[in-house]
Length: 233
Length: 108
Image 1: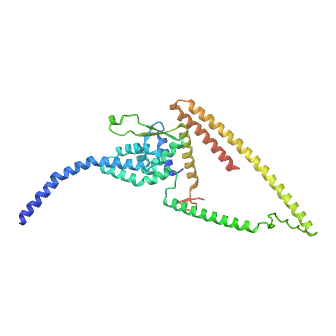
Image 2: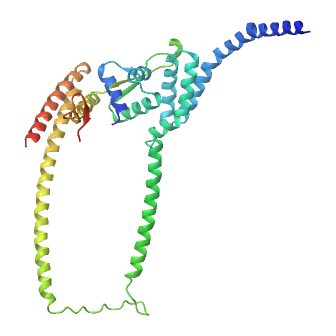
């Protein structure tokens, strides 16, 4: 019985190894690429609508260039697992876990601050409410009595305020002049950029990059000179 | 701009007239697809690179069409500027610590 069992086991093993395994391998060889493509298309479906078609085609081409069926399947599984992160990136949302934690904390803090602001405003309104008459009209404010000695102090305060105002006006004038200079510089830069763009697009495509390189080198040299001048100053 | 995006720009700048496709760029930069393709999408959206589909018949060629990317003229200028600036900043910031021969340190 033992010998018969051993022979049967041997025959079974030989059948499995010789007939079934090659069939399975052949089936897998046919199925694996299809599974990989399906997985990639599934990953592309998770993208924003405007990117779905492009991602599906582009990733399928990428998948096709990867050697080995198992490697392809691995890449496709990776695409599915990474798809939510890519989708968040394409939507311009934070992707890292720390970023998400920061966003959550920022949202919580913003909510807490808004709540505090509402509470403070509410209490301030309650404290500054003007008393009203039973008919609904507002009571007149009591006249303020200013002592005679305080008039001298008020004059000093006014003088100090005038001096501060003069200083502020001088600062404002200086800031205005600086802004004007910056605007003039910006206009010059924009004119240079526009000239550069016109020159670039006017040339043939083969010459554009050479021209751009030359212009960039000149611009960088000018920037370095400016930087050196700033350092000296 | 992230270092990964700069790596993509650097690869595209090495042969600016030659269009490159995703796997090609991924091999040269060593970036994973999940990083590479969003970066390419962002750069294309910003107008630094332009993407175009390969003009082949997929059934004839026996493979899906690829999407090729190349720098635009404006993108090439901007990319060079960004890389030049990054290199300049790096070389300025990273200087050896005085008094320690052979040792490097970040001077703040």
